Image (cartoon, rainbow, N blue to C red; front, side, top):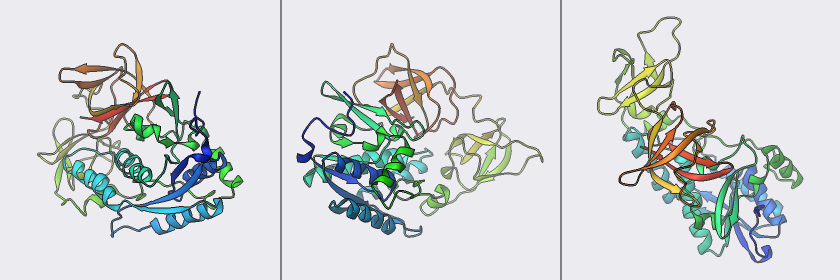
Length: 364
């Protein structure tokens, strides 16, 4: 039987720490859990923030406090600056320096929300943590499965593929049962001050930012050449580390006509500090059907190599048919039926079977 944000136990005796971001989703998660009888505490996670960017955390914390006051639940602040700086920011900068395209939102869930936050919550007496993620958890025979959220447009399992059985066992996703429109209605019903607050966008916790501008505070600019598929120099850029596969901005094309179609980055050469661009997002030379992944995590068991699955290589991409194979040395390969465009080293491939998120890995 599916867990509707509940575990099979008397809720009144169960303490849950809800990660409150100051947004509507986590606010409704707290309200729903209180309504279900859980002993709820709201927790605002304070993370590291660069001093050269506008800082909204105080406003978000105040919004979270208002929600707790309205619901009549305790409010705490967890200072996870160190964990966030080391686990997300340092990782992100290091990956870009290597020429990869990291996924900080995946790492934020792994290292901060379901890592440091979960660990501290359990040490402080919580039985569970809860977030406003659009995903669902189902327990079957003592094993936990992660299912897509009931709103296709908001499903966030792509960013949660690293979760383990122990983490799912201690996690609740109350809003995953509802479409976003219903969550907004519930916020109004509970008279929450965040009911009409806009959804946050951009980097986990920090918000919207220009990645290239952000990185230039940590990585030195270095002019390089833009090449077409024949190897001809047709433009320049400020450094290959600031660019990612599939990107159509951030470089200058000098050799072009007045009616040229846009160019997309199809490959990067870190050693020579060059990028190759094309009018399509697919490289004519690279095999983008068979993609190796590392740091693999299967949530509820190893998939069957004889079955067909679906997977995506970026958030909200339409699911693609694939199968999973193991190569010598336990190397995992995702074999797609069709070539994939904008395949970027460092991004995640996430695999699905029906409504279940099986897990995934990082593109090599």
